[in-house]
Length: 251
View 1 (tube, rainbow, N blue to C red):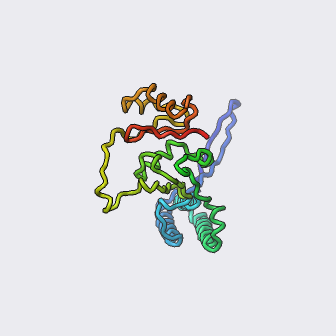
View 2: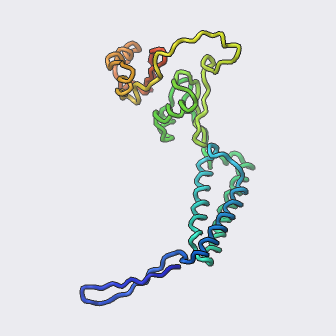
View 3: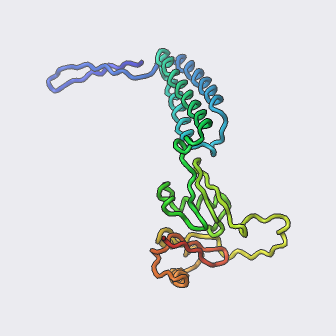
């Protein structure tokens, strides 16, 4: 523990001395020893907690990893007496994590309480706006996650499920599934447009209209042809590769 003496002078020329204790050690060798021990302990705990890819981590796993790492990092600058005490906190936290994981394996029904449940965000080709709002996910993020799955138009998606680890699983309509060898004889059409968002939650994306040289009047005509009089009635609209517009109205 580092100690600092601070002298304070007041207006009446009285002198006050204040002693401030700062947590930490000024011994370089102690820091090196703490670092080596913290690294070793952290390595052992990591092996005990098992292997899991980063993309498979749930929110609970993520918070646990951050907490254990934070404790280990703070231990580096501790004096030896405090370092030994903090090791117990690190070990107990790791043991609690292992115990919780074992309990979940024994009683899978508890997994929903701890990790949550997968949520359907697209059902029968329709965006589930209430589910997205509950999850705190906006349409832009949903479209981005679809593109990460090589899906550039929602029109292809029958179901989309947001998993507990934040990953999106999709089920395409049969006609939009990947081509197999026996389908190579199918004729393909040239792509006229890159699928782009035209309307998001009742607001026109003017930048994208300009990008593809389409006017606001053209978009309104597309809506009128579907019996939609007001842009605000549209939850999501997307330009398709063939020049048509996919429209999902607000329910």
